[in-house]
Amino acid sequence: MKALITNPSISIKASDELIKQIKTIDDYDDMPKSICTIRSQKCQTSKTLRFNDSLITDDDREFLKSLVLEPVELVKSTFDENPTIKENGILNLNDLHWLFQKIQKENLEKVDKVYLHEFLLSSEVVLPKNEEIPRNQQLDARCRLLKMQQENREYKAITKNVDNVRKPHPEDTMSYQIKQINKQLIAVLQFIISVLAGFLFGFQGVQLMFGTLDFGFRLLLGVICSLVIALAELYFLAKTLNEDLQYEAHIENKKAHSKIN
Image (cartoon, rainbow, N blue to C red; front, side, top):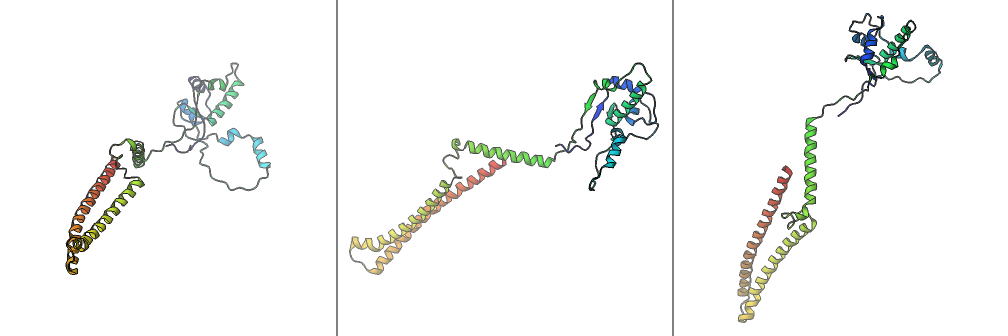
């Protein structure tokens, strides 16, 4: 991850020809630190060339003073007018401006004139770069996990129609849930109808086969038949519900296993 550019100044990596030319320049009291570093000597003074001094002339200052402008709130800039050059052979614009002035001054006294732009042709322009911000390892791990989960969901959605396990039991569809509800409702209705049919058989059917019987005896037969049928139906109903619960548990375990993978 890259941060904002803190120092937008452009620098020049001096070529061998430019370094040789810098070493031939006479010593000056206002020599910048970068020039002193290239010449392998200590600066005689701490005076540095300011950005405004190198790019703004006296005429420009007079013109700026003559302007009538509305007052504005000034915001302190984070830009360093005199950035420290740590690498040897790197010159900023202030250094080049100072070097240009000194070369022009020495050309007035020399027959063989030299020009700064000729040395800059073989030099390299160093553009400002963004600072690298170290990435958060926990955030990267979470992003990778979310990406894997998303890929797993997409893969399952693609292979859902050809999966031999999921195809006969599409538990995620609405139709499957409706079928399960209908299946349970039918089992309950079947239980009620079977119990009522057993009661009617014991209460009324026996009388049709053997003739007129006592009301209490017919009622007792109806209750006994309905209880026997109710016990049988409860057994099969409990067995069916147990199978459904085991299937649901299997589906949940399968989903949990797929999430882990």
